[in-house]
Image 1 (spheres, rainbow, N blue to C red):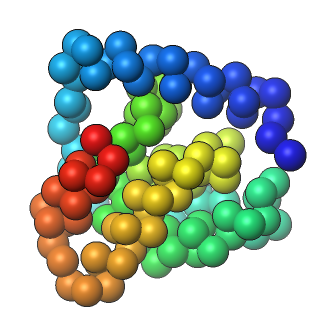
Image 2: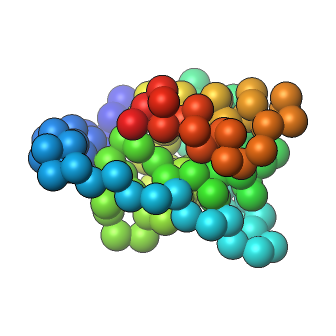
Length: 129
């Protein structure tokens, strides 16, 4: 079940996306913060959407990668959202956002194959930008 707050937030992101595309906004990916950890990534007990627990587990395994990727669903425009890692913290936008989850799955798959952060970013941009 999606909360009203989550639904309205997602609706606002969808509505804003075409405007950013028309304006040509293509913000760069952030640099990963030194020493970043997955300490703030929501745990299974904190998730409202239990079906998302697997992707949250993946992000916990690669916080330094997720922190170097700008989420392309539009949530990066929200206050406090810095990187894809932010989507898996706090209110856990990624619990109900298929773009956040898809980006994380792709990033993890490429990370496991030994791809560099630059290669992962390029793949994310090609798939989701």
